[in-house]
Length: 89
Figure 1: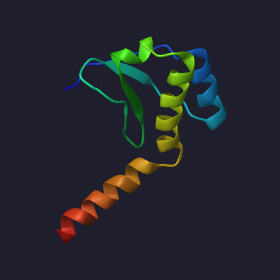
Figure 2: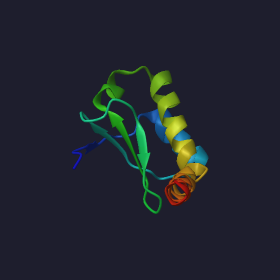
Figure 3: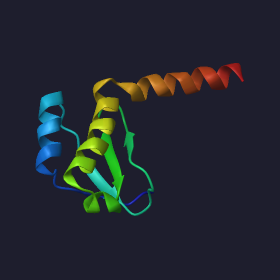
């Protein structure tokens, strides 16, 4: 299991969430090297602990990328693709 702690949203990241109409927790963990978005019904964005050391612009860019995955509902589509790929393999 990955241990993570929920982060308070930086102002610009919170504003971005509101613009996209999302309410998604942002959690940091030392077990990841890159950000990931996980989940469909209750998605979560997990970032490396180094997220806190990024500039505001970089934090907003990382969050925007992950939030757009959620906004576009990429996770269920990716899961469906993996199931089809496994069936055809």
